[in-house]
Length: 193
Image 1: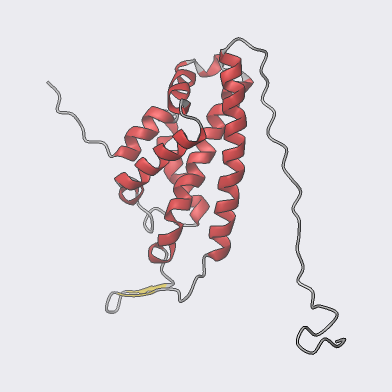
Image 2: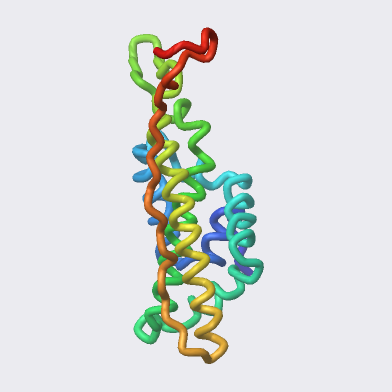
């Protein structure tokens, strides 16, 4: 009788909800998105229970039946998958990558030190918030892939119901840029500027 191997919740969730063969690639994708290597962000950190449970909750927030639909989709042989199924699986993979990356953004300054010296094992951290641009980009991509996943899941559900579903990504709205302009008059004195 074999002894059961302990798996962290994230590993279990990834194996249940994502392609089993890309489980390690999700970890590598998260590292790539965050700009870290496997020393700065190891598998043990990615496998903590809170990360897995949060990912599971986010997948269920997209659609309550998403994990069950994903398991059914994964059961079909890769060579026989339709475009709708392929887009659904890709959407889950991308959404999961950015979801986990977004969770780790708060700890990013602690994981990626500015300088490490071996003299007295000193570590110098960045001051302030050097990762604001990275965090904003990850949040933007998370939103993008969530919309993509919602559309892909809806197409998958319609496809499974026997309808002629095709995957059409949701239309993206154009960015609206706002520029601050000084008023033409002084609000204190009421005179022109």
